[in-house]
Image 1 (tube, helix red, strand yellow):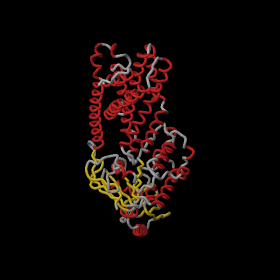
Image 2: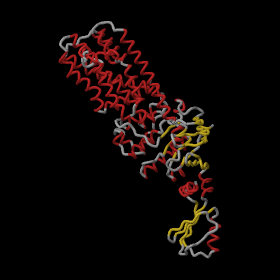
Image 3: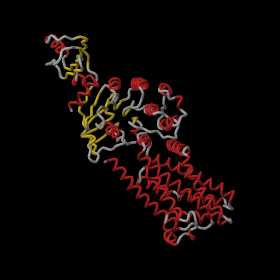
Image 4: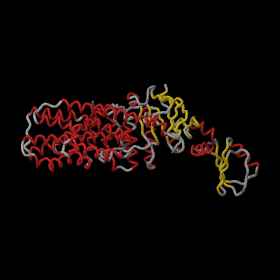
Length: 289
Length: 244
């Protein structure tokens, strides 16, 4: 069963088309990352999926119902990209407000691990940006919901807290197996959490596949080495980066690249062959658009 | 009902902790009552009428601004957007806002009751008290809807100043600060057509132990329908703006 289904969805603002004929479905248990540059349409997509925004045309179904349906809203949780909590409420009161909608409360261990336990009596306007974001993330785990929709869940959060959030989320996904749809600019986050990646560019889906499929498709192998030789030309590469004496060659067949190096009797050292990271893959995807 | 209470509770807490709000809604009517009404409360009759007037002024302010500013904020603040993704219906949130408005309305009237019982000759029978609260808070619903109307037709930044620009002149012109008989001539002609005047007429007649005039009820009902219509148009406008 599809938990989320977008059929030919278009969203137009006055002069801008934020989403253009987007069709996408997410099945139970799938972990989907939504990627794209700023303004690609990610937040618009997520807002429409959660009923906060309305599509200009096309159909949106969440759990086979309208996302604005009250019953649907008990099945998914949403962490918006920006969420300013009420200044004059305490942390524990905000948690209680959200818990009031569900039979399951928030696991106190989550609060401990996010270092929020000592802040329970603090007013929200006394929290730092990172603390507020961690609290918002914790709110999204309240209730036993089958679909988590998170818009840049670790934005404004320090490196250590990011790792804690990944661990908590990873464990949550493993134990409860909800579907996950999240947007992110953090490639480490994407590789850790997602098993499917959807790339949006200018409101259109340009790529949809598993992390390994996308890596294979867009930039399979990376060969790097150090050499004093200048102006080397290669036949078996897609792209060559040269910074001083550091060469980085990208190509589909790393064996062929290395063979070419030997054929050219290239004097090289520190040869490394590795799979490209997602960051390089997306740089290439957006470069080709 | 639990959800309504959950939301009413946080709304009340949020406002209780804002001194500016408490001063504006509770202290201001009490202060005006002390300045303008207590010196004129020379006998039971005038004490009762002036107490009723300033109670109307207090409830009008709380209901109108609570809904006006609250709804305008709902349309822009991310917290309210977030609430829309939780399994709670719009009607629950509106009911919670009603509870919150009634809570602060009761507090502001309680402040007046305390002042009146110490510094005026105000005296009401038990039956009059019952009718007073019924008339005051029952017909006050018109101002909740008037506030909803303001909330949908203004922005978060303009709701409070625009609300005050409506609240204070309407209170004065409706005879809630000074009896209608001593209003300037021009206002005397307009006054009977204002919702605040008819609101006052209902509560004044209750505390004067007279029958509530039907005209006042009918006029308030007409205003209620009018504000409902403008609120609906404003709501659709807001919805269409989200659609665009």
